Image (cartoon, rainbow, N blue to C red; front, top):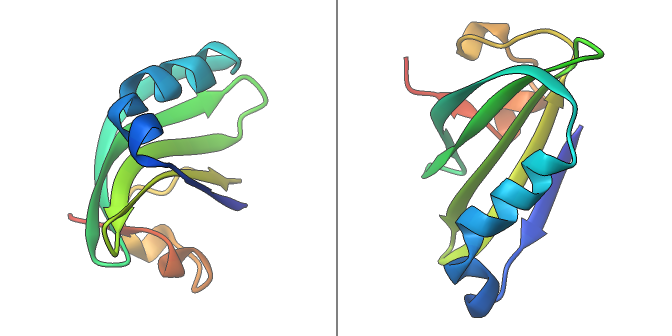
Length: 96
């Protein structure tokens, strides 16, 4: 699944706090920092292995100068672009 959360300027300045608040509400086993592209723009965030085995990526970036948080969920752990479905490739592209 995919969710875009568009941020106003004030919220964009507090993106780190927003990401921390989202993380506090999640039940996960492990997490790793991640960088990737979405819409040819750089995003920084975290990949979570959830307790239910789902994979979540929550990241911050800008598309067309609009700040946003991108929330992606996967059934399998994507490690590179070959692991992504055509649908998922519309939202995420790995640098490796």
